[in-house]
Every structure is written in structure tokens, then in C-alpha cells.
Amino acid sequence: MTFPGSAAQAAPRRAVLLSSHLGTIRTVSKAFGAAGVETRLAGALDELGNAQSEIDLAVVDLDAEPKLDGEALVGAAHRWCPHAELMVVAGRDARRRLTAVLAAAQVAHALPKAPPSLPSDDFDGPDERDLFVALRRRATAEVPLFAGIAPYLAGAASVHELLLQSTDEKEAAVGAVVALAERMLLQGELLRRIELVAEELVMNALFDAPVDESGRRRYASLERSTRVVLADHERVRLRYGCDGRAFAVSVADPFGALRRETVTEHLHRALAPGGARPSHRGGGASVGLLLAFAAANQLVFSVEPGVCTEVTAVIDVAGGNRASLQRGTSVHFYEASA
Amino acid sequence: MNPLTIETTKLSDGTLRVEMRGKINEQFEPGKLLDQLRGNKVVIDVSGVRHVSSIGIREFERFLEKLSDVTLVEVAPAIATQIVLLPTLAARARIESAQLPFTCDHCGAERSHTVPFQKGAASTHAPTCTCGNKMALDGIAEQYLPA
Image (cartoon, rainbow over all chains, first blue to last red; front, side):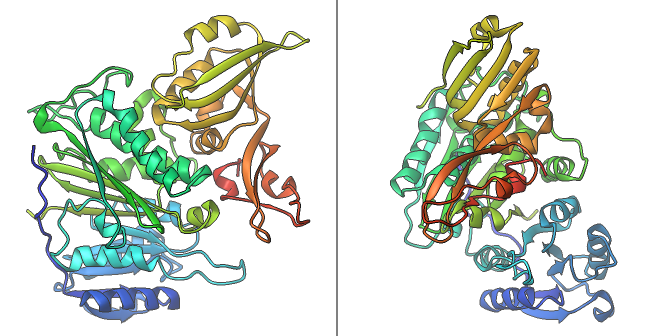
């Protein structure tokens, strides 16, 4: 079994930030500066000027053009910088608006702005740590594509690792994650959310990730109480750890079969107002994804097609459950360069 | 690993009261329980359910669909959050109340408290802390109760 760790991605050197929101400008500028990315600021679409083919990354604040919906704004940004990957941020109603624009192929990152402390206050910028890690992963080749949880924890935090070959090992593996959380005196809803993401990511890797040579899912239609045993080279890698501020769980499978569109379609359909909620009858994958999204503060997908899929969930445990949930959920996609 | 335990008692009016505790996941097999409950008025106390996986939801929904007169009471956060995300989960059941976590922003105290499973109940039925201040839901109300 091999889990590649060195696949690097194209590093952005030039970026644009489309926002007139002070909190977002402050946070994004700091993160860009730290990552060594040259940044241009535009408060609105008409300040962008002629299309720019050399821009690598555009941060689009969905609140920048109140008269445009998110899809239209993302479309306009894409036309302006057609080769750039897009990072979108939003304040009000962020969950619905961000998952709606994630379906656009160019959107690689979606981050909610931090909620105001008082109802009368404005939103703050997106979470600095979340943003910084995303930019660092984009801007430098230092972080391998399948880096697991390490980028999301402070440097000295221990990373625990387990390899799973069968469903028989699932309970013990999830139990090990829960045991670490309990040793850190996490309890109640924070503990439940950690257990939930661990269980859903592991079950997804064991049942939904394995594909045969023709790309067909081997076990997706099986009852989940069925015993599944993977070959030695197909083992699933679970990594987990906590630095006191964030608890991170990462599960990698050596199939690389997860498609970005699958993720975005599930989330968009499920979270659109009056949208079709996933039914249990469709199997566990879509519901599991939705539950992981609702439980995590960051959900990170790293894929090299045919080689590896790694899904990392990060839960903010620095404060109480309310503060953690109020942060919302960011979604990040990283794919190996062709 | 904290498996699901189920206890059933018959109330004086003939209602069957079921108490579930632990985890609802792919191991949940309610066959024998269904034989016992079918055709009866059933009240299920799920305050002790601390974890429900996506597969557990599926099995729990199938279980509820086979009961004709069922009420969920003291719904734990593990189930409340999933009912809000997946409203079909308990389409066949009445949901009476939820047992949710509350914290006191003044003294830091924490406690579980039962509120009606309805919009706004987290604030209208919030408990008062022993320090005298009103407690607040340790979460976002729209993720635990109907919006």
C-alpha cells in the first residue's frame, strides 16, 4: 500500500481580492502577505478592469455585489480571471450561499465569515487559521497533497495513525478517536460531533470508496452491517489529533474515486431551501457527507484520481459548542495537478 | 463500546414506553422490538441516545415507519440535529420534546434541559441557572429545533 505524499500543486503567485468588507480585507490581506502572494484589491466588479489571465487565485466576497446572486458573481469573476481558482467567502446565510456556488468548477474553497459578537455588529473576516492554511497549501509546495491533519494543528501536536483493513476494526478505530477526545476532557456535543465525523469518514472509506478496475463501486450497495475486508494494499488510513484548539480527523483511501461534483451536488441539493433532502434509501454516503458537513468546521477533500482520496474534518474545540457551530463550515478541495 | 440498550415498560393506559440508550448505528436491529410494539400506542424516550450514524438514521427511520402511533420524547441532540437536517426521518412520528444542552454565560454552568420540540423553544423555555441568570442553548437553535 502506498499513500503518496509528495504530489504538489501549482502555486499561485498573483491573486485578487474582490471585497469591500473591512474584516475580510484585513484577514485575507494578512494571510496573503504571510503566504507571499502578490494581491490586488477591488471593491466591486467594475473596479477590476480588463480580464486578467495571469491571476492564479481570486477571493470573491459574495457580499461584494448585493444585486448579484452568488452564481452570477462567481461567473463574472471567472470570466475576468479565467485561469484562476476561486475562493468564496460569505457572511449572512453563508451555509446556503456557499454550498450553492461550490457547484461551479472553479470554486476550490468556500469559507464563512466569522459571525458578529453582537447582533448589531458586522461580520468579521473568515477564520484566519482556516484561511492561512488554505493559502499556504495553495501558495507553497511545502504541504503535500495528502498531508492528513498536520496542517490543521499546531506544530507540536501528536498525530495518531491507524490502518484499517476491515469493518471489524471500525468500532475500535472510532473508539480510539473518542478516547483521545475524552482524555482532552471534551464532552457533550463537541465529543458527539468528533465521533460522528470519525465514524462517517471511516464508513465512507470502507464502503463507498473501494472501486473495481472498471471504476464501479464494490460495496456501495451492501447493507452496512455486512463485513467488508480490504486487500493489504487497499487499507484505509485514519489519522487524528488535537492541539487544544482544533480536533482533526482524516481518513485516506487508496482509490481516489471521490468526484468533486458528487460532494458539491449532495451538499447543494441538501442545503438549498426546500431542496431535496437526501433520503436514507439512497444509502449512507450522501447522508454521511451531510452529517460530516454539519458537524465539522472545516471539511477538506484532497484527491488524486485513481490514486488516493483523503477527507479531513476539523472541529473547533477551543470554546463551547455554540461558538464552534457559529463559525460555520468551510469546504476546501485540493486536486493533484495533471 | 456503549451499545444500544432498550427497555420497554407498559404504562397504566396501555401505552408502551421504550427507553433507548447508547448508539444507533448499523448494528441496530429492531426486529424483536417491532414484534412487541406493533399495533400499540408507543412513546419512545431517546434522551439516552448519544450517537446516531448515517446508517443508524436509516435503520431508525425504517423502524419508525413500521409503527402506527409513535411519539418521540426527550429527543437527544444526536437525534434532534438529524431530524432538523433530514425531516423525513421522523415524518411518521410526533416529536414532543427535546433534551438539549444549555450553558450559563455568567457562571459557566452546564445542564441538559427539556424543551418542546418547536421553533423558538430554546429561548422561550430556557432554564434559569442556579446563579439566577437565564441559560442559553449550547448550540445554534436552528440546528436542534425546527426553524
